[in-house]
Image (cartoon, rainbow, N blue to C red; front, side, top):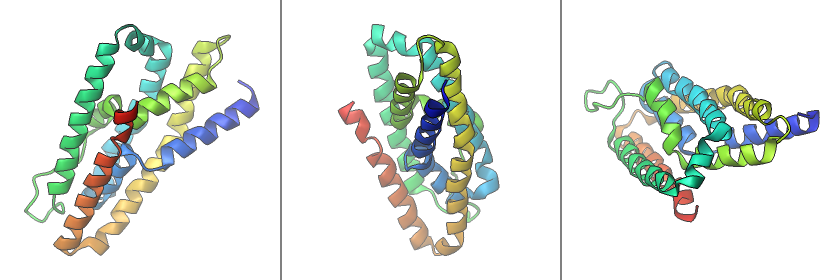
Length: 198
C-alpha cells in the first residue's frame, strides 16, 4: 500500500470513527450513565469487534451476502429491532447507583457482536474494503484496513466516553438526566436511517 493511500485510509478511518453514529452515541450515554471505568469493556468490544468484522467482510463474508441476499435482509431487520430495543433501554435508564435503574453497561462480547447489526459499521466496512484494498495483494490490504480502524478507534472511543463521563456532573438533576437519555435514544433511532435507504 502506497503512503498516499495509507494516509487517505487513516483519514477515512479517523473521520468515520470519530463522527456520531450508534457506537459513539452509546459510548456517550454509557459514560453519562455508568462512568468511564464501567464503560471500558464496551469500548474494548467495539475496538476489537469492528476490525474483526472488517477483516471477515473483506475476506469473503460479504460475498455470502451477495449470493444469499435474504441473510443480509434478515440481519438488517434484526439489527434495526435490536437498536430500537437499545434505544428504549437508554431512554428508560436512570443514573447508575440511584436505586431506580436496573440497567448495566454493555459488556465486551455484546459490544463486539453489536457491530454486526450496526448500519454505520456495515456501510463503513464495505466502503473501506472497496476503496482501500488492492486485488494484487488483497489479503494484506484487507488486514491493513482492519488495522487502521483498530488504531484510530481507541482514541475515538475514549474521547466519546470521557465526554459522557464529564457530563455526569451537569446531569445530577434526574429531570436533566432523563432529557439527556431520551435525546440519546432518539438520536440512536435516527441513526437507523441508512437501513431505510440502503
